Image (cartoon, rainbow, N blue to C red):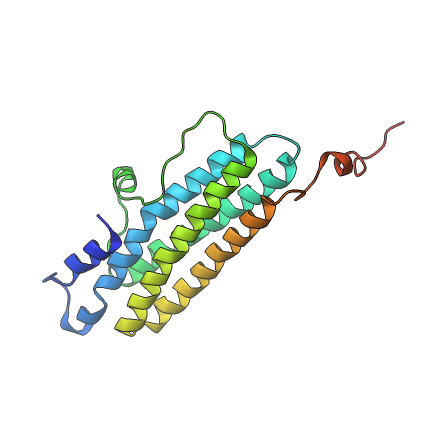
Length: 185
């Protein structure tokens, strides 16, 4: 079920008080982001755990930082949903049913391919967040729109870092890695 179909269903809910009717679909739209947030978190951590090669130190730290940021944002989304009297994820099965972010359980993946895949996933997430931001604007929810704006900025920042990290010569190359190591005599 896509975010838009979930939002369409929310418009017909009978349990929403009249003063909140115009905002009833906002927590649904936010909740629809959660499966992708959890999927992206797990995918980022998985690549963090399995990255190897000369760029290992830089990639490992980059992916750890990004995973932490994604998990923090996931918590903030859940808290905003609850503040809007919405329902958040209550079981892991929900996460597996709805993500738009594709699973990757490949045994081997080159680091640059990993980064490219995460870059694509973050772009998709930013796009979905922009749809949610538009909904907030349409419903006049300035507070949620402001929060979503920050989350879009974070996703676009991750996309930028992943793009630049995958460029040839990024982080470290074989010639420089040995120059910066301490010398023991």
